Image (cartoon, rainbow, N blue to C red; front, top):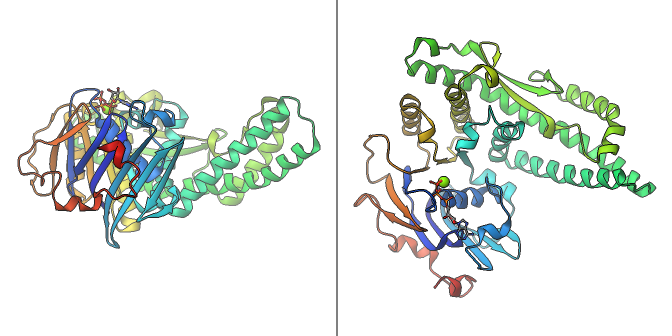
Amino acid sequence: MKLTHLRLSQFRNFAMQEVSLRPRLNFFLGANGQGKTNLLEAVFMLSRGESFRSGQHEHFLKDDQSRARVAAAVESPAGRGQLILDFSEGRTSATYDGKRTGFSTLSAQIPVVLFSPESLASIKEGPDQRRELIDSVLATRTERDSKLLREFSKVLRSRNILLKQIAKGDTRSTTRGSLDSLTTVFLLLATQVTEARLRALREIEPEWKKSVAQIFLSSGSSTERIEPAHVEIRYEISRHDAMGWTADQIFDAFSKRLEELHSRELQLGASLVGPHKHDLRFLFSKNDSRFYCSQGQQRALILAFKIAQISVHHTVLGRYPILLLDDVMSELDATKRNRLMEYLEETTAQVLITATDLIWSRQFPQERNAVFAVENGNVTVTAQGAVRAVGSDDLSIFSRSSTDPLEDAAT
Ligand SMILES: Nc1ncnc2c1ncn2[C@@H]1O[C@H](COP(=O)(O)OP(=O)(O)OP(=O)(O)O)[C@@H](O)[C@H]1O
Ligand SMILES: [Mg+2]
């Protein structure tokens, strides 16, 4: 799965930008505030429908524009296709080859894995970031898991609305009735999401251990040497390690806890039990890496997690996701940076990497890799001959038709 072309219209600080992407490594270099993350955000949104940054819909629209569009030409074993994401009237919608498509389908069909400074910092950040680590695995794995996550968040939101109503004094029996029936669905979905997370973690953990050992070994320092057996992942439910729990155990634990916390939930107006309350711990020589490891070691553990995620994805599904690396090279020391670059070269994945400078010296074959400069919402190819010029015949897929609502706005 590769993106061969991208077109950004009125998205963030891009007025109208077309980019011919190469099948392997695509470097986007530029000073701060030029649009590098915006470009990666556009690709991420093509897959997930939502951004990895906080912000509202209007933030995606350039200045005072009323709509924006991101389009991509997609090449997969099944053939070529055109994916379009429209931002209009507060809504984001997607079409694939002209047909409306849901994001559960897209995130599994066109999976993207993001490496960002925030994701690398997830051990020291809050539990949300750590849950996002595992949920991004589910979102990109299968349509079923991706749908499950979306359904759970929808039911969680609805349940919280009802609980809030009751907390504010709504005593109607219909509200209680709705809460009871929603709680039944909530319990089932909460169990399924937890089960799916555990299944994914159990698959990833052995690869992660190998990857951790490799990163620490290549760092060469004897104090950093670590065997795979010295590291471990814990999935915590109410402070218990649930890595070995079955679906029945999860369901029983949730039911019991829901009963215990029933009056507290009604008082606070929020769901206090479920996967949105769980946490991940990364143990390093039996110590919680959050309190034991240095920042660089913590980043290495997460880097190893991402590498393991990609390797397992490839083993299970037989193809690589698209990898987005936003400004992460500067977060890693030279050995970890090299280990990451080596890993990226071992794969056949398409990779989009942003950086302010090329701070590593490696040679890449020009026909499959490219270096772009990003400046004030303009993307240009910097390595001569690395890619064909934007505007070549391959871009015919983006030819503007009369059905393109951005035609006027863009020209
Ligand atoms: N809706 C918008 N309309 C116009 N410009 C926008 C919009 N949203 C963001 N920008 C501009 O985009 C720029 C930020 O882009 P981005 O975050 O991609 O920078 P970057 O190149 O990744 O920089 P850094 O190296 O600091 O991470 C800012 O200059 C901001 O003003
Ligand atoms: Mg950035």
